[in-house]
Length: 241
Image 1 (spheres, rainbow, N blue to C red):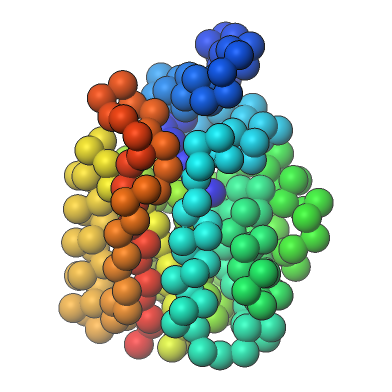
Image 2: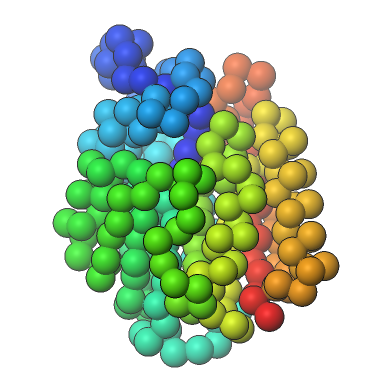
């Protein structure tokens, strides 16, 4: 799911939960993420954020799951009920929830945060959920397993390296789709450029073809001190050859 840079659950995180204005409270939580950089600090942060995660991203007007689901369903022409979807960095299950509304029924999810996986289990959307730290090891699936692979939120600076998209492609069936998102605000432009370069490189290698690149101007509410209003984001859809 949505991933800002993360840190250990610290005093600032808990104190900001007492801020009266919901947006200011969530903004403070997100900004506190930038204090740490190790993998364990990221996991610790999301473990501590799990209980209020859905409420908080709603305050941010975070709609990437809907944008991704709309992009997938506008191009996927197969049997949605039979299609098996891999939800990478699935969080609490927001993407699967939207895709189910579009007719998809079979989901496998992976995430590094056990409390979020537990919340996803309670939604009864997934046939399987696995605790997996992205980037440290290959995805725990055989090649060409899934009809759709979707990764919403984790492709951003300070999180999963963009080369992980090669793993997404490997687990996708021939003719299947890979849907990815990233933010397009100033702080993430360098990462976005690297991601797009890797997407193009894989296309040049004949691994997939780019089907759609959709820029969304109002991706989510801005939290940086240098930004106001909303920040943009991008949805990428590729089809494996």
